Length: 340
Length: 290
Image 1 (cartoon, helix red, strand yellow):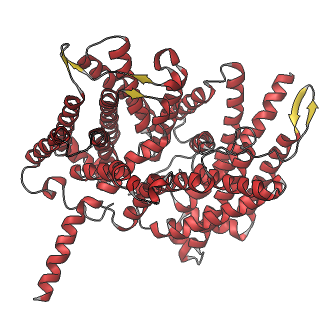
Image 2 (image 1 turned 30 degrees about the horizontal axis):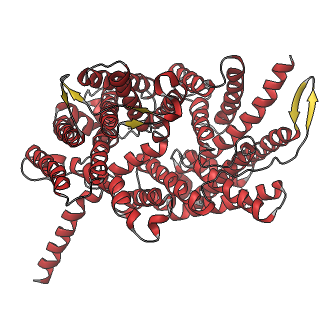
Protein backbone atom coordinates (compact mmCIF):
# COMPACT_ATOMS: atom_id res chain seq x y z
CA UNK A 1 0.00 0.00 0.00
CA UNK A 2 2.98 2.26 0.33
CA UNK A 3 4.44 2.20 -3.11
CA UNK A 4 3.28 5.34 -4.78
CA UNK A 5 2.70 7.66 -1.88
CA UNK A 6 4.21 10.71 -3.53
CA UNK A 7 1.00 11.35 -5.44
CA UNK A 8 -1.47 13.17 -3.24
CA UNK A 9 -5.11 12.69 -4.02
CA UNK A 10 -5.61 16.17 -5.34
CA UNK A 11 -3.11 15.65 -8.13
CA UNK A 12 -4.34 12.27 -9.23
CA UNK A 13 -7.23 13.68 -11.09
CA UNK A 14 -6.43 16.71 -13.17
CA UNK A 15 -8.85 19.57 -13.14
CA UNK A 16 -11.24 20.45 -10.39
CA UNK A 17 -12.23 17.29 -8.51
CA UNK A 18 -15.31 18.87 -6.98
CA UNK A 19 -16.65 19.72 -10.43
CA UNK A 20 -15.97 16.14 -11.48
CA UNK A 21 -17.88 14.79 -8.49
CA UNK A 22 -20.88 16.93 -9.33
CA UNK A 23 -20.70 15.81 -12.97
CA UNK A 24 -20.56 12.21 -11.78
CA UNK A 25 -23.66 12.84 -9.69
CA UNK A 26 -25.50 14.28 -12.67
CA UNK A 27 -24.59 11.25 -14.77
CA UNK A 28 -25.96 9.00 -12.00
CA UNK A 29 -29.19 10.99 -12.02
CA UNK A 30 -29.80 9.85 -15.60
CA UNK A 31 -30.50 6.32 -14.36
CA UNK A 32 -34.14 6.86 -13.26
CA UNK A 33 -34.82 8.51 -16.62
CA UNK A 34 -33.35 5.49 -18.43
CA UNK A 35 -35.51 3.22 -16.29
CA UNK A 36 -38.63 5.23 -17.12
CA UNK A 37 -37.75 4.96 -20.81
CA UNK A 38 -37.46 1.19 -20.41
CA UNK A 39 -33.80 0.94 -21.43
CA UNK A 40 -32.59 -0.26 -18.02
CA UNK A 41 -34.33 -2.88 -15.89
CA UNK A 42 -36.46 -1.61 -13.03
CA UNK A 43 -34.55 -3.69 -10.45
CA UNK A 44 -31.24 -2.13 -11.43
CA UNK A 45 -32.12 1.09 -9.63
CA UNK A 46 -32.11 -0.79 -6.32
CA UNK A 47 -28.73 -2.35 -7.10
CA UNK A 48 -27.31 1.03 -8.07
CA UNK A 49 -28.69 2.79 -5.00
CA UNK A 50 -27.23 0.11 -2.69
CA UNK A 51 -23.88 0.40 -4.45
CA UNK A 52 -23.91 4.17 -3.90
CA UNK A 53 -24.96 3.81 -0.24
CA UNK A 54 -22.15 1.32 0.32
CA UNK A 55 -19.80 3.78 -1.39
CA UNK A 56 -20.70 6.41 1.24
CA UNK A 57 -19.91 3.94 4.02
CA UNK A 58 -16.67 2.93 2.30
CA UNK A 59 -15.53 6.55 1.96
CA UNK A 60 -15.57 6.80 5.74
CA UNK A 61 -13.66 3.57 6.21
CA UNK A 62 -11.20 4.67 3.52
CA UNK A 63 -10.33 7.73 5.62
CA UNK A 64 -9.70 5.47 8.59
CA UNK A 65 -7.75 2.70 6.85
CA UNK A 66 -6.01 4.88 4.32
CA UNK A 67 -4.96 7.80 6.47
CA UNK A 68 -4.62 6.47 9.99
CA UNK A 69 -3.73 2.86 9.18
CA UNK A 70 -6.43 1.51 11.46
CA UNK A 71 -8.87 -1.21 10.57
CA UNK A 72 -12.42 -1.16 11.89
CA UNK A 73 -14.43 -4.37 11.80
CA UNK A 74 -17.50 -2.70 13.25
CA UNK A 75 -18.78 -1.07 10.08
CA UNK A 76 -21.70 -3.47 9.86
CA UNK A 77 -22.66 -2.90 13.48
CA UNK A 78 -22.65 0.88 13.23
CA UNK A 79 -24.45 0.88 9.90
CA UNK A 80 -27.01 -1.52 11.31
CA UNK A 81 -27.47 0.73 14.31
CA UNK A 82 -28.10 3.60 11.89
CA UNK A 83 -30.83 1.63 10.11
CA UNK A 84 -32.58 0.60 13.32
CA UNK A 85 -32.44 4.08 14.81
CA UNK A 86 -33.79 5.62 11.60
CA UNK A 87 -36.62 3.11 11.51
CA UNK A 88 -37.40 3.59 15.20
CA UNK A 89 -37.46 7.39 15.02
CA UNK A 90 -39.45 7.75 11.82
CA UNK A 91 -41.79 4.75 11.96
CA UNK A 92 -42.35 4.34 15.72
CA UNK A 93 -41.83 7.83 17.12
CA UNK A 94 -43.00 9.65 13.96
CA UNK A 95 -40.16 12.16 14.13
CA UNK A 96 -39.40 14.15 10.97
CA UNK A 97 -36.76 12.66 8.65
CA UNK A 98 -34.23 15.45 9.23
CA UNK A 99 -34.23 15.18 13.03
CA UNK A 100 -34.13 11.37 12.86
CA UNK A 101 -31.16 11.63 10.49
CA UNK A 102 -29.19 13.79 12.91
CA UNK A 103 -29.92 11.65 15.97
CA UNK A 104 -29.35 8.38 14.09
CA UNK A 105 -25.91 9.55 13.03
CA UNK A 106 -25.04 11.09 16.40
CA UNK A 107 -25.76 8.06 18.59
CA UNK A 108 -23.48 5.62 16.66
CA UNK A 109 -20.79 8.32 16.64
CA UNK A 110 -20.97 8.64 20.41
CA UNK A 111 -20.68 4.86 20.82
CA UNK A 112 -17.84 4.87 18.30
CA UNK A 113 -15.96 7.60 20.15
CA UNK A 114 -16.26 5.71 23.44
CA UNK A 115 -14.93 2.55 21.74
CA UNK A 116 -12.12 4.57 20.24
CA UNK A 117 -11.27 6.23 23.55
CA UNK A 118 -10.67 2.81 25.08
CA UNK A 119 -8.94 0.98 22.26
CA UNK A 120 -6.94 3.65 20.45
CA UNK A 121 -4.65 4.32 23.37
CA UNK A 122 -2.80 1.10 22.65
CA UNK A 123 -1.66 -0.55 19.42
CA UNK A 124 -3.59 -0.06 16.19
CA UNK A 125 -4.90 -3.62 15.95
CA UNK A 126 -6.76 -3.21 19.25
CA UNK A 127 -9.32 -1.06 17.45
CA UNK A 128 -10.16 -3.90 15.06
CA UNK A 129 -10.73 -6.31 17.93
CA UNK A 130 -12.70 -3.79 20.00
CA UNK A 131 -14.93 -2.82 17.09
CA UNK A 132 -15.49 -6.50 16.32
CA UNK A 133 -16.71 -6.94 19.89
CA UNK A 134 -18.93 -3.83 19.76
CA UNK A 135 -20.38 -5.00 16.45
CA UNK A 136 -21.27 -8.38 17.97
CA UNK A 137 -22.89 -6.66 20.96
CA UNK A 138 -24.92 -4.42 18.63
CA UNK A 139 -26.05 -7.43 16.62
CA UNK A 140 -27.15 -9.11 19.84
CA UNK A 141 -29.11 -5.96 20.67
CA UNK A 142 -30.79 -6.06 17.24
CA UNK A 143 -31.87 -9.64 17.91
CA UNK A 144 -32.83 -9.47 21.58
CA UNK A 145 -34.41 -6.04 22.10
CA UNK A 146 -37.39 -7.18 20.06
CA UNK A 147 -39.88 -4.65 21.42
CA UNK A 148 -37.90 -2.05 19.47
CA UNK A 149 -36.23 -4.05 16.71
CA UNK A 150 -38.75 -6.85 16.08
CA UNK A 151 -35.95 -9.39 16.52
CA UNK A 152 -35.35 -11.75 13.63
CA UNK A 153 -38.44 -10.65 11.72
CA UNK A 154 -36.79 -7.30 11.00
CA UNK A 155 -38.02 -3.77 10.93
CA UNK A 156 -39.38 -1.64 8.14
CA UNK A 157 -39.68 2.07 7.38
CA UNK A 158 -40.95 4.26 4.59
CA UNK A 159 -39.43 6.45 1.93
CA UNK A 160 -38.41 9.71 3.61
CA UNK A 161 -40.73 12.69 3.92
CA UNK A 162 -38.69 15.88 3.57
CA UNK A 163 -39.55 18.98 5.65
CA UNK A 164 -42.65 17.25 6.94
CA UNK A 165 -44.74 17.43 3.76
CA UNK A 166 -42.66 16.42 0.72
CA UNK A 167 -43.11 12.64 0.39
CA UNK A 168 -40.42 11.07 -1.80
CA UNK A 169 -40.98 8.03 -3.99
CA UNK A 170 -38.42 5.48 -5.11
CA UNK A 171 -36.84 7.56 -7.84
CA UNK A 172 -36.66 10.68 -5.71
CA UNK A 173 -35.10 8.72 -2.85
CA UNK A 174 -32.50 7.54 -5.34
CA UNK A 175 -31.88 11.20 -6.18
CA UNK A 176 -31.49 11.91 -2.46
CA UNK A 177 -28.91 9.11 -2.19
CA UNK A 178 -26.96 10.55 -5.12
CA UNK A 179 -27.04 14.03 -3.59
CA UNK A 180 -25.74 12.66 -0.29
CA UNK A 181 -23.01 10.72 -2.09
CA UNK A 182 -21.79 13.81 -3.95
CA UNK A 183 -21.91 15.84 -0.73
CA UNK A 184 -19.93 13.17 1.12
CA UNK A 185 -17.39 13.01 -1.71
CA UNK A 186 -16.90 16.79 -1.53
CA UNK A 187 -16.68 16.70 2.28
CA UNK A 188 -14.14 13.89 2.13
CA UNK A 189 -12.11 15.75 -0.45
CA UNK A 190 -12.03 18.89 1.67
CA UNK A 191 -11.35 16.93 4.83
CA UNK A 192 -8.36 15.19 3.25
CA UNK A 193 -6.91 18.45 1.99
CA UNK A 194 -7.48 20.35 5.23
CA UNK A 195 -5.08 20.72 8.14
CA UNK A 196 -6.58 17.62 9.72
CA UNK A 197 -6.09 15.62 6.53
CA UNK A 198 -2.48 16.70 6.29
CA UNK A 199 -1.94 15.76 9.93
CA UNK A 200 -3.36 12.33 9.21
CA UNK A 201 -1.11 12.00 6.17
CA UNK A 202 1.92 12.85 8.29
CA UNK A 203 0.91 10.23 10.83
CA UNK A 204 0.73 7.63 8.10
CA UNK A 205 4.26 8.44 7.00
CA UNK A 206 5.79 8.18 10.45
CA UNK A 207 4.00 8.27 13.76
CA UNK A 208 7.12 9.30 15.60
CA UNK A 209 7.81 12.17 13.20
CA UNK A 210 4.21 13.33 13.42
CA UNK A 211 4.37 13.27 17.18
CA UNK A 212 7.61 15.24 17.12
CA UNK A 213 5.86 17.89 15.02
CA UNK A 214 3.27 18.31 17.70
CA UNK A 215 0.47 16.29 16.15
CA UNK A 216 -1.65 14.58 18.76
CA UNK A 217 -1.89 11.08 17.28
CA UNK A 218 -4.57 9.91 19.69
CA UNK A 219 -6.86 12.81 18.89
CA UNK A 220 -6.55 12.51 15.11
CA UNK A 221 -7.01 8.76 15.14
CA UNK A 222 -10.15 9.27 17.19
CA UNK A 223 -11.37 11.91 14.75
CA UNK A 224 -10.79 9.66 11.74
CA UNK A 225 -12.61 6.83 13.47
CA UNK A 226 -15.52 9.08 14.45
CA UNK A 227 -15.88 10.24 10.83
CA UNK A 228 -15.81 6.63 9.63
CA UNK A 229 -18.55 5.69 12.09
CA UNK A 230 -20.58 8.75 11.18
CA UNK A 231 -20.47 7.91 7.45
CA UNK A 232 -21.40 4.32 8.25
CA UNK A 233 -24.42 5.47 10.26
CA UNK A 234 -25.45 7.89 7.50
CA UNK A 235 -25.21 5.02 5.04
CA UNK A 236 -27.41 3.03 7.40
CA UNK A 237 -30.06 5.76 7.51
CA UNK A 238 -30.15 6.02 3.71
CA UNK A 239 -30.23 2.22 3.43
CA UNK A 240 -33.21 2.07 5.76
CA UNK A 241 -35.17 4.64 3.77
CA UNK A 242 -34.35 3.18 0.39
CA UNK A 243 -34.46 -0.59 0.98
CA UNK A 244 -37.16 0.05 3.63
CA UNK A 245 -36.29 -3.10 5.54
CA UNK A 246 -33.55 -4.18 7.94
CA UNK A 247 -32.92 -7.36 9.87
CA UNK A 248 -30.07 -8.58 12.11
CA UNK A 249 -28.42 -11.10 9.78
CA UNK A 250 -27.50 -8.40 7.27
CA UNK A 251 -25.09 -6.80 9.72
CA UNK A 252 -22.50 -9.52 10.19
CA UNK A 253 -18.73 -9.48 9.98
CA UNK A 254 -19.01 -10.59 6.36
CA UNK A 255 -20.62 -7.25 5.51
CA UNK A 256 -17.83 -5.28 7.21
CA UNK A 257 -15.34 -7.32 5.22
CA UNK A 258 -17.12 -6.45 1.99
CA UNK A 259 -16.79 -2.76 2.83
CA UNK A 260 -13.11 -3.29 3.53
CA UNK A 261 -12.82 -5.10 0.20
CA UNK A 262 -14.30 -2.04 -1.51
CA UNK A 263 -11.47 0.24 -0.47
CA UNK A 264 -8.67 -2.27 -0.96
CA UNK A 265 -9.87 -3.28 -4.41
CA UNK A 266 -10.83 0.20 -5.54
CA UNK A 267 -7.91 2.12 -4.16
CA UNK A 268 -6.77 3.19 -0.73
CA UNK A 269 -6.81 6.96 -0.16
CA UNK A 270 -8.69 7.57 -3.40
CA UNK A 271 -12.22 8.94 -3.62
CA UNK A 272 -12.88 7.78 -7.21
CA UNK A 273 -11.24 4.49 -6.24
CA UNK A 274 -13.80 3.93 -3.51
CA UNK A 275 -16.63 4.38 -6.00
CA UNK A 276 -14.95 1.99 -8.45
CA UNK A 277 -14.41 -0.52 -5.66
CA UNK A 278 -18.03 -0.30 -4.58
CA UNK A 279 -19.16 -1.07 -8.12
CA UNK A 280 -16.77 -4.03 -8.31
CA UNK A 281 -17.60 -5.54 -4.91
CA UNK A 282 -21.34 -4.99 -4.83
CA UNK A 283 -22.10 -4.56 -8.51
CA UNK A 284 -20.15 -7.31 -10.25
CA UNK A 285 -21.67 -10.21 -8.28
CA UNK A 286 -25.22 -8.92 -8.77
CA UNK A 287 -24.95 -7.66 -12.33
CA UNK A 288 -22.47 -10.07 -13.89
CA UNK A 289 -21.52 -13.13 -11.81
CA UNK A 290 -25.10 -14.24 -11.19
CA UNK A 291 -25.82 -14.20 -14.91
CA UNK A 292 -22.92 -16.48 -15.87
CA UNK A 293 -24.09 -20.00 -16.72
CA UNK A 294 -22.30 -22.34 -14.25
CA UNK A 295 -20.47 -20.08 -11.80
CA UNK A 296 -23.54 -17.97 -11.12
CA UNK A 297 -25.42 -20.90 -9.59
CA UNK A 298 -22.82 -21.59 -6.91
CA UNK A 299 -23.37 -20.11 -3.46
CA UNK A 300 -20.56 -18.07 -1.99
CA UNK A 301 -18.97 -17.25 -5.33
CA UNK A 302 -19.14 -13.53 -4.56
CA UNK A 303 -17.22 -14.04 -1.32
CA UNK A 304 -14.46 -16.01 -2.97
CA UNK A 305 -14.29 -13.48 -5.79
CA UNK A 306 -13.84 -10.60 -3.34
CA UNK A 307 -11.52 -12.49 -1.00
CA UNK A 308 -9.18 -13.56 -3.77
CA UNK A 309 -9.28 -10.06 -5.25
CA UNK A 310 -8.31 -8.50 -1.88
CA UNK A 311 -5.31 -10.78 -1.47
CA UNK A 312 -4.16 -10.52 -5.07
CA UNK A 313 -4.43 -6.73 -5.02
CA UNK A 314 -2.57 -6.32 -1.74
CA UNK A 315 0.20 -8.59 -2.94
CA UNK A 316 0.61 -7.38 -6.49
CA UNK A 317 -1.17 -4.05 -7.03
CA UNK A 318 -1.37 -2.34 -3.66
CA UNK A 319 -2.68 1.01 -4.86
CA UNK A 320 -5.94 -0.44 -6.14
CA UNK A 321 -7.68 -0.90 -9.45
CA UNK A 322 -8.49 2.79 -9.89
CA UNK A 323 -4.93 3.30 -11.10
CA UNK A 324 -5.15 0.52 -13.66
CA UNK A 325 -6.12 2.83 -16.49
CA UNK A 326 -3.37 5.43 -15.93
CA UNK A 327 -0.79 2.68 -15.43
CA UNK A 328 -1.74 0.93 -18.65
CA UNK A 329 -1.62 4.26 -20.45
CA UNK A 330 1.84 5.00 -19.07
CA UNK A 331 3.09 1.54 -20.05
CA UNK A 332 1.83 2.05 -23.58
CA UNK A 333 3.45 5.49 -23.77
CA UNK A 334 6.85 4.21 -22.69
CA UNK A 335 6.58 1.31 -25.13
CA UNK A 336 5.81 3.73 -27.92
CA UNK A 337 8.76 5.88 -26.99
CA UNK A 338 11.05 2.87 -26.93
CA UNK A 339 9.75 1.80 -30.33
CA UNK A 340 10.68 5.09 -31.93
CA UNK B 1 -21.23 -25.77 46.51
CA UNK B 2 -22.23 -28.22 43.80
CA UNK B 3 -23.12 -25.28 41.58
CA UNK B 4 -19.67 -23.78 42.05
CA UNK B 5 -18.01 -27.08 41.17
CA UNK B 6 -20.26 -27.39 38.14
CA UNK B 7 -19.32 -23.88 37.02
CA UNK B 8 -15.64 -24.59 37.61
CA UNK B 9 -15.77 -27.75 35.49
CA UNK B 10 -17.71 -26.01 32.73
CA UNK B 11 -15.21 -23.16 32.83
CA UNK B 12 -12.31 -25.54 32.43
CA UNK B 13 -13.97 -26.98 29.33
CA UNK B 14 -14.96 -23.71 27.64
CA UNK B 15 -11.74 -22.06 28.77
CA UNK B 16 -9.79 -24.87 27.15
CA UNK B 17 -11.59 -24.30 23.85
CA UNK B 18 -10.79 -20.58 23.95
CA UNK B 19 -7.23 -21.28 25.07
CA UNK B 20 -6.48 -23.59 22.12
CA UNK B 21 -7.78 -21.00 19.67
CA UNK B 22 -5.94 -18.19 21.46
CA UNK B 23 -2.69 -20.14 21.45
CA UNK B 24 -2.99 -20.48 17.68
CA UNK B 25 -3.54 -16.75 17.29
CA UNK B 26 -0.64 -15.78 19.52
CA UNK B 27 1.69 -18.27 17.80
CA UNK B 28 0.95 -16.64 14.46
CA UNK B 29 1.10 -13.14 15.92
CA UNK B 30 4.55 -13.73 17.34
CA UNK B 31 6.06 -15.39 14.26
CA UNK B 32 4.35 -13.61 11.35
CA UNK B 33 3.60 -10.34 13.14
CA UNK B 34 -0.06 -10.25 12.21
CA UNK B 35 -3.30 -10.82 14.07
CA UNK B 36 -4.90 -13.76 12.32
CA UNK B 37 -8.59 -12.98 12.04
CA UNK B 38 -9.08 -16.05 9.85
CA UNK B 39 -8.19 -18.51 12.63
CA UNK B 40 -11.84 -19.23 13.44
CA UNK B 41 -12.89 -19.53 9.82
CA UNK B 42 -10.07 -21.93 8.96
CA UNK B 43 -11.03 -24.00 12.01
CA UNK B 44 -14.66 -24.01 10.92
CA UNK B 45 -13.65 -25.15 7.44
CA UNK B 46 -11.61 -28.05 8.79
CA UNK B 47 -14.32 -29.00 11.26
CA UNK B 48 -16.49 -29.40 8.16
CA UNK B 49 -13.77 -31.57 6.58
CA UNK B 50 -13.67 -33.79 9.68
CA UNK B 51 -17.45 -34.07 9.90
CA UNK B 52 -17.61 -34.84 6.20
CA UNK B 53 -15.14 -37.71 6.68
CA UNK B 54 -17.15 -38.92 9.67
CA UNK B 55 -20.42 -38.98 7.77
CA UNK B 56 -19.01 -40.67 4.70
CA UNK B 57 -16.84 -43.31 6.37
CA UNK B 58 -18.32 -43.85 9.82
CA UNK B 59 -14.92 -43.81 11.54
CA UNK B 60 -14.84 -43.12 15.31
CA UNK B 61 -14.89 -39.46 16.33
CA UNK B 62 -11.38 -39.37 17.84
CA UNK B 63 -9.83 -40.76 14.64
CA UNK B 64 -11.77 -38.23 12.59
CA UNK B 65 -10.54 -35.47 14.88
CA UNK B 66 -6.98 -36.51 14.09
CA UNK B 67 -7.79 -36.46 10.37
CA UNK B 68 -9.31 -33.00 10.89
CA UNK B 69 -6.12 -31.81 12.58
CA UNK B 70 -4.05 -33.23 9.71
CA UNK B 71 -6.22 -31.51 7.10
CA UNK B 72 -5.92 -28.29 9.13
CA UNK B 73 -2.16 -28.74 9.17
CA UNK B 74 -2.17 -29.04 5.37
CA UNK B 75 -4.47 -26.02 4.99
CA UNK B 76 -2.19 -24.01 7.29
CA UNK B 77 0.87 -24.93 5.23
CA UNK B 78 -0.95 -24.06 2.00
CA UNK B 79 -2.16 -20.71 3.34
CA UNK B 80 1.35 -19.82 4.41
CA UNK B 81 3.03 -21.00 1.21
CA UNK B 82 0.52 -19.47 -1.20
CA UNK B 83 -0.31 -16.21 0.57
CA UNK B 84 1.48 -15.29 3.78
CA UNK B 85 5.04 -16.09 2.73
CA UNK B 86 4.54 -13.83 -0.29
CA UNK B 87 3.53 -10.98 1.98
CA UNK B 88 6.72 -10.53 4.00
CA UNK B 89 7.29 -7.01 2.72
CA UNK B 90 3.67 -5.96 3.05
CA UNK B 91 2.99 -3.60 5.98
CA UNK B 92 1.24 -4.96 9.10
CA UNK B 93 -2.15 -3.38 8.34
CA UNK B 94 -2.23 -4.89 4.86
CA UNK B 95 -1.25 -8.25 6.32
CA UNK B 96 -4.22 -8.12 8.68
CA UNK B 97 -6.42 -7.30 5.72
CA UNK B 98 -5.01 -10.34 3.91
CA UNK B 99 -6.19 -12.55 6.77
CA UNK B 100 -9.59 -10.87 6.47
CA UNK B 101 -9.56 -11.79 2.79
CA UNK B 102 -8.85 -15.38 3.82
CA UNK B 103 -12.04 -15.32 5.91
CA UNK B 104 -14.04 -14.46 2.80
CA UNK B 105 -12.42 -17.24 0.78
CA UNK B 106 -13.08 -19.96 3.37
CA UNK B 107 -16.54 -18.61 4.13
CA UNK B 108 -17.36 -18.84 0.43
CA UNK B 109 -15.68 -22.20 -0.11
CA UNK B 110 -17.26 -24.08 2.82
CA UNK B 111 -20.91 -24.03 1.63
CA UNK B 112 -19.72 -24.68 -1.92
CA UNK B 113 -18.02 -27.93 -0.91
CA UNK B 114 -20.04 -29.13 2.07
CA UNK B 115 -23.48 -27.65 1.42
CA UNK B 116 -25.33 -25.06 3.45
CA UNK B 117 -26.96 -27.38 6.01
CA UNK B 118 -25.43 -27.54 9.49
CA UNK B 119 -23.89 -30.95 10.25
CA UNK B 120 -23.80 -32.85 13.56
CA UNK B 121 -20.54 -33.93 15.13
CA UNK B 122 -20.83 -36.54 17.93
CA UNK B 123 -19.13 -36.45 21.30
CA UNK B 124 -15.86 -38.32 21.65
CA UNK B 125 -17.24 -40.46 24.49
CA UNK B 126 -20.70 -40.69 25.98
CA UNK B 127 -21.88 -40.97 29.56
CA UNK B 128 -21.39 -38.78 32.60
CA UNK B 129 -20.12 -38.90 36.13
CA UNK B 130 -21.09 -37.21 39.39
CA UNK B 131 -18.51 -35.39 41.48
CA UNK B 132 -19.96 -33.97 44.69
CA UNK B 133 -23.42 -33.58 43.12
CA UNK B 134 -22.03 -31.86 40.03
CA UNK B 135 -22.49 -33.78 36.83
CA UNK B 136 -19.69 -33.85 34.34
CA UNK B 137 -19.81 -35.73 31.06
CA UNK B 138 -16.90 -37.97 30.16
CA UNK B 139 -16.66 -35.96 26.98
CA UNK B 140 -15.97 -32.80 28.98
CA UNK B 141 -13.27 -34.64 30.94
CA UNK B 142 -11.68 -35.76 27.67
CA UNK B 143 -11.84 -32.21 26.32
CA UNK B 144 -10.31 -30.72 29.47
CA UNK B 145 -7.51 -33.27 29.62
CA UNK B 146 -6.73 -33.22 25.88
CA UNK B 147 -6.67 -29.41 25.90
CA UNK B 148 -4.37 -29.17 28.91
CA UNK B 149 -2.06 -31.95 27.68
CA UNK B 150 -1.69 -30.38 24.24
CA UNK B 151 -0.92 -27.02 25.77
CA UNK B 152 1.57 -28.40 28.27
CA UNK B 153 3.36 -30.31 25.50
CA UNK B 154 3.48 -27.19 23.34
CA UNK B 155 4.79 -25.03 26.18
CA UNK B 156 7.39 -27.68 27.04
CA UNK B 157 8.51 -27.79 23.41
CA UNK B 158 8.55 -24.00 23.21
CA UNK B 159 10.84 -23.76 26.22
CA UNK B 160 13.04 -26.83 25.80
CA UNK B 161 13.25 -28.00 22.18
CA UNK B 162 15.31 -26.65 19.34
CA UNK B 163 12.09 -25.87 17.47
CA UNK B 164 10.83 -23.87 20.43
CA UNK B 165 14.05 -21.92 20.60
CA UNK B 166 13.75 -21.09 16.88
CA UNK B 167 10.15 -19.98 17.35
CA UNK B 168 11.08 -17.75 20.26
CA UNK B 169 14.02 -16.32 18.34
CA UNK B 170 11.83 -15.61 15.29
CA UNK B 171 9.26 -14.03 17.58
CA UNK B 172 11.73 -11.72 19.25
CA UNK B 173 13.52 -10.60 16.11
CA UNK B 174 12.83 -12.02 12.70
CA UNK B 175 15.83 -10.53 10.89
CA UNK B 176 18.45 -11.42 13.49
CA UNK B 177 17.01 -14.91 13.75
CA UNK B 178 17.48 -15.36 10.02
CA UNK B 179 21.05 -14.10 10.29
CA UNK B 180 21.71 -16.72 12.95
CA UNK B 181 20.75 -19.44 10.50
CA UNK B 182 17.23 -20.11 11.72
CA UNK B 183 14.98 -21.03 8.79
CA UNK B 184 12.34 -18.41 9.65
CA UNK B 185 10.08 -19.15 6.65
CA UNK B 186 9.86 -22.75 7.83
CA UNK B 187 9.13 -21.64 11.40
CA UNK B 188 6.38 -19.30 10.22
CA UNK B 189 4.89 -22.07 8.09
CA UNK B 190 4.97 -24.39 11.08
CA UNK B 191 3.14 -21.86 13.24
CA UNK B 192 0.39 -21.45 10.67
CA UNK B 193 0.01 -25.22 10.41
CA UNK B 194 0.00 -25.77 14.19
CA UNK B 195 -2.35 -22.84 14.75
CA UNK B 196 -4.82 -24.24 12.23
CA UNK B 197 -4.65 -27.67 13.87
CA UNK B 198 -5.18 -26.18 17.36
CA UNK B 199 -8.13 -24.17 16.10
CA UNK B 200 -9.67 -27.22 14.47
CA UNK B 201 -9.38 -29.22 17.68
CA UNK B 202 -11.12 -26.44 19.56
CA UNK B 203 -13.82 -26.35 16.88
CA UNK B 204 -14.38 -30.11 17.18
CA UNK B 205 -14.59 -29.84 20.97
CA UNK B 206 -17.23 -27.16 20.57
CA UNK B 207 -19.09 -28.95 17.76
CA UNK B 208 -21.26 -31.38 19.80
CA UNK B 209 -22.81 -28.54 21.82
CA UNK B 210 -23.70 -26.41 18.79
CA UNK B 211 -23.43 -27.97 15.35
CA UNK B 212 -20.93 -27.71 12.55
CA UNK B 213 -22.07 -24.59 10.72
CA UNK B 214 -20.64 -21.49 9.08
CA UNK B 215 -20.82 -19.26 12.14
CA UNK B 216 -19.90 -21.82 14.79
CA UNK B 217 -16.48 -20.29 15.50
CA UNK B 218 -17.40 -16.59 15.41
CA UNK B 219 -17.80 -16.29 19.17
CA UNK B 220 -14.73 -18.40 19.92
CA UNK B 221 -12.65 -16.40 17.47
CA UNK B 222 -13.63 -13.12 19.10
CA UNK B 223 -13.07 -14.42 22.62
CA UNK B 224 -9.71 -15.88 21.58
CA UNK B 225 -8.68 -12.48 20.20
CA UNK B 226 -9.94 -10.84 23.38
CA UNK B 227 -7.97 -13.27 25.51
CA UNK B 228 -4.88 -12.23 23.57
CA UNK B 229 -5.79 -8.63 24.36
CA UNK B 230 -6.48 -9.44 28.00
CA UNK B 231 -3.38 -11.57 28.43
CA UNK B 232 -1.12 -9.30 26.43
CA UNK B 233 0.42 -10.03 23.06
CA UNK B 234 3.97 -10.27 24.41
CA UNK B 235 3.97 -13.72 25.99
CA UNK B 236 2.77 -17.16 24.94
CA UNK B 237 1.29 -18.06 28.32
CA UNK B 238 -0.61 -14.78 28.93
CA UNK B 239 -3.40 -15.40 26.40
CA UNK B 240 -3.82 -19.00 27.54
CA UNK B 241 -4.30 -18.01 31.19
CA UNK B 242 -6.58 -15.16 30.09
CA UNK B 243 -8.62 -17.64 28.03
CA UNK B 244 -9.29 -19.72 31.15
CA UNK B 245 -10.19 -16.56 33.08
CA UNK B 246 -12.60 -15.60 30.30
CA UNK B 247 -14.10 -19.09 30.29
CA UNK B 248 -14.68 -18.82 34.03
CA UNK B 249 -16.15 -15.31 33.76
CA UNK B 250 -18.40 -16.39 30.91
CA UNK B 251 -19.88 -19.25 32.93
CA UNK B 252 -20.25 -17.13 36.07
CA UNK B 253 -22.00 -14.33 34.19
CA UNK B 254 -24.36 -16.63 32.34
CA UNK B 255 -25.30 -18.37 35.58
CA UNK B 256 -25.63 -15.42 37.93
CA UNK B 257 -26.58 -12.49 35.67
CA UNK B 258 -28.03 -13.38 32.30
CA UNK B 259 -27.39 -16.15 29.83
CA UNK B 260 -28.61 -14.10 26.85
CA UNK B 261 -26.38 -11.13 27.48
CA UNK B 262 -23.42 -13.01 28.95
CA UNK B 263 -21.19 -12.59 25.88
CA UNK B 264 -22.02 -8.90 25.54
CA UNK B 265 -21.33 -8.23 29.24
CA UNK B 266 -18.10 -10.18 28.94
CA UNK B 267 -16.88 -8.13 25.95
CA UNK B 268 -17.63 -4.89 27.80
CA UNK B 269 -15.89 -6.15 30.94
CA UNK B 270 -12.76 -7.04 28.98
CA UNK B 271 -12.77 -3.65 27.27
CA UNK B 272 -13.11 -2.07 30.71
CA UNK B 273 -10.12 -4.04 31.97
CA UNK B 274 -8.05 -2.78 29.03
CA UNK B 275 -8.92 0.74 30.15
CA UNK B 276 -6.97 0.13 33.35
CA UNK B 277 -4.39 -2.39 32.12
CA UNK B 278 -3.73 -1.26 28.54
CA UNK B 279 -1.07 -3.88 27.89
CA UNK B 280 -3.03 -6.78 29.26
CA UNK B 281 -2.72 -8.63 32.55
CA UNK B 282 0.64 -10.21 31.75
CA UNK B 283 1.95 -7.83 29.11
CA UNK B 284 4.83 -5.46 29.37
CA UNK B 285 4.79 -1.94 28.06
CA UNK B 286 6.17 -1.77 24.55
CA UNK B 287 8.77 0.92 24.12
CA UNK B 288 8.94 2.23 20.58
CA UNK B 289 12.35 3.17 19.34
CA UNK B 290 12.80 5.58 16.48
